[in-house]
Image 1 (tube, helix red, strand yellow):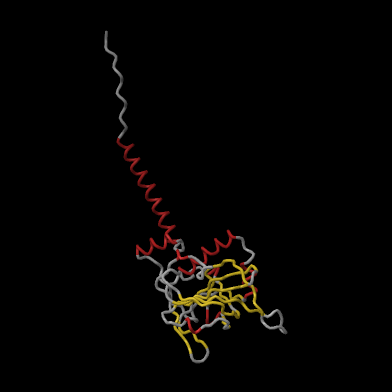
Image 2 (tube, rainbow, N blue to C red):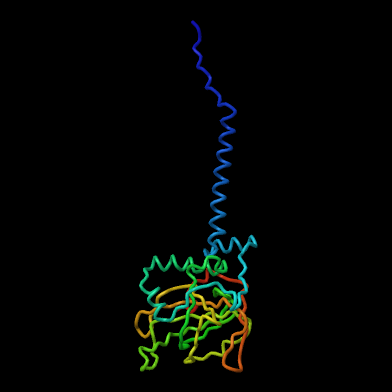
Length: 245
C-alpha cells in the first residue's frame, strides 16, 4: 500500500519579513517622534528636564530688561485673589504646568503671563540652597496689605507671595520682618510661576510664587542695591512652595 505523507507547510514569502521589518521600524520611528515631542515640549516635567540637561539641550533663560520683557497683565492683590483662588485643584495643577513651561521657555507664548503689583509686608526671609528650585539667591514670604477704602489704613489681605530673587550677592539681610515691599510691573516685572493655597492667620489664603524676569539692579532705598541675574541651574523637581510648611 502507498505510504501516506503529510504536505509540508508552505513557507512564508520573502516580502512578508520585509513588510514586518518595515512595520516595526515605522512604529519605532513614530514612538520616538512622540517621545521627543513630549520631552522637548514639556520641560517643566522634572524627568524631561533632566533628560534635556543630559542632552545639553536645556532652554537658556533670556536676560530680559525692563524695556523688552514680554507683555502681560499686571494685577493687584484683589484681582489676583479673584483670578486664582476659586480654581479647583485640577485647574491649578494644569495652570502651574503651563506657568512653569512658560518660565522655562522665556514666555514664548505669554498668554498666562501675569505680573503682580501692590504692597506686601515681609513675614520671612530664606536663603536659597541646592535643594531649591533656584539654588542661588533668597526668597521673601510676604502678605498683601490692602486698604479697604480711602479712609482706612491698609490691613492684611489673604494673598501671600514668595518673591524669589536670583542673585549671587548676599543681599537677604537687606530685608527684615515687617518691612513693606512695594511691587510694580515696572521696574520689578515679578511674574507668577506657581499658584497654591495656604492659610494666613487661620483663614484660607492664596499663595503665589513669583520670580522677576527683568534683570539688572534692584534698588532698596537710596543707598543699597544688588544685582538680579538669570539663574544658571534650575531644579523643577524641588517643588513649590519654596518655603515649605
